Length: 128
Length: 141
Image (cartoon, rainbow over all chains, first blue to last red; front, side, top):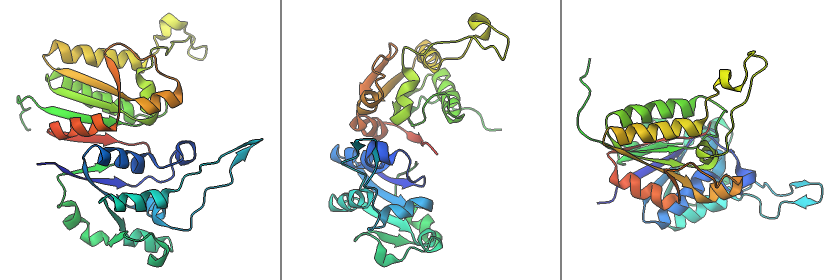
């Protein structure tokens, strides 16, 4: 039976502009395509990944403009469309003044107090 | 104190940090070295900047601040450390499948990796993780 792995993303906005995505969201897509049974938990600063209104477009150096900026909230929403559950720690969102209605559809709130129960539902936790 | 297990384990590591940036990779290699000495079968998936760890063109240099020439400085090269843990694994009856994320390699132009390592994809990471007793990911912070 396939293992269930929870991908915990805590470090946000690392190499996103250069990669035009988040590398852990990206590798989750790639491994899901290879048959992996995965879910994602956003915690700490990474809760901001689920904010719909973020916009990283407009970067240019000299005449070199970035045409495909990262669209991390969209990438997360697409994970949901592939059957990957996306959770966020609601306490971390609240601390940052992020309201639930600012987040992508399908992102599921989990309190810090409920984390042990959530984590217990997975065979492995990969904390990136 | 717990007695070290003699059971042969299969472990997967995912590394993400580039060389010469922090101590996480050294810590990872310490763990890999211990597992290799026990003859475990290991997979290491080098992701993002970690693909440069096995880059064959890393070059030692002299260090004027230390007052040493290149030979005296004997500068550690991550590629040499990797070669060493590969050798330790083989000597102890285990093996290390060191996989460099191919797209990450291309982005960085570090396709010339040391012998004993290979190019792969996230599918290889998942395959290894499924076949392993456990997986440790060490992400960039």
